[in-house]
Amino acid sequence: MSFGNRFHIRRSWQYTLLGAARRREALMAAISDVARLAGVSKATASRALSGRGYVADDTRERVVAAAATIGYIASPDAAGLVTGRTKNVGVVIPFVNRWFFGEVLEGIERALLAAGYDLTLYNLAHSGPERNRVFEFFLARKRVDAVIAVGVDLSEHEVSALELREKPLVCLGGSGGAAARLAVDDRAVGQLATEHLLHLGHTRIAHLAGTGAGEAPATVPGRRQLGFFEAMAAAGLTPSPADVVETEMSMPGGYRAALQLLGHPGPRPTALFAASDEVAFGAMRAAERLGIAVPRELSIVGVDGHEYAEMFDLTTVEQYPGEQGRAVVDVVLRLLGDGAEADPLPDSGAPMPTRLVVRASSTAAPR
Image (cartoon, rainbow, N blue to C red; front, top):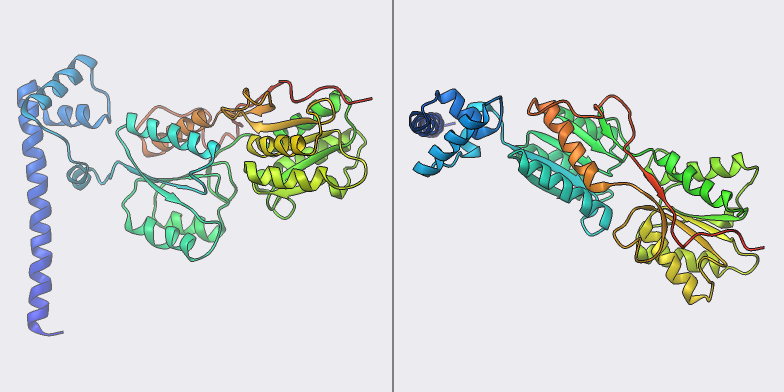
């Protein structure tokens, strides 16, 4: 390397350090102005404006009013120079165009905004180079304080890549080796939905499972299918292989799978447990096309508590995705030290709440 290049690099680094120092000075000067006007210390003014640490309500209001008077707006980038925090959380999610994930994302976004955090969203592919770049490049390049994975089946390599960033990782559903995880008990969900149909007298019950349920029992579709099999076995029943069909967990997927299942020659099932409400909606449309009356000839139960479930009169095991999104942010804030302890705690293993809601899509088995 030439002397000129070394000199240029050294001078660039000096300018970088000088710029950072000046930004710190500018930040502290602005906070000093707010503190002087509000009659508090700079530390109190900083806590009041950042939302971190205890400040009496009347003091906080006085500081906020002083900041508004002089037009002071705290810069996250400048504050990050002082605190080491970016006030930004990365969220990886497999779908943004499906109801459940959209509701979770809305809950996360509202909770983060209320806590003064930004959100950087990554729509994660199932596999391939795009997915690899999210973990190995984008999360490394983007400065985030923590990562939330929603419904993602993380590999050991992906978990390790996030741990190397020394940022908290919190999972909502999905599978993988993350220490902090919140989820419903999907195995119990599958059992509850199936037991409801068994209680109504059905003995031939089919299951529209999520893609990969048979090969990946630790995933959400796999756990729901396992609950289905266990409930059937407890009743002394063994489903026919033809009565379990895997499909993507969407309305078109449910429609196609139900056409295959219900259109097959031979005796039909009298009840169907769908792995999600959207799959159940598709199955109801397929039954209508085939001239099968729901629920007189075919009872259907879903999972999720979709906003359209009541309109479809669908019996479903409700979960509460918006509340789940807010709960996972509570855990993130707890791990970052920015809030009260979350309930459930990351290591408690307590499942998120669910509830069976019975509507007109399920009834007693036909005689």
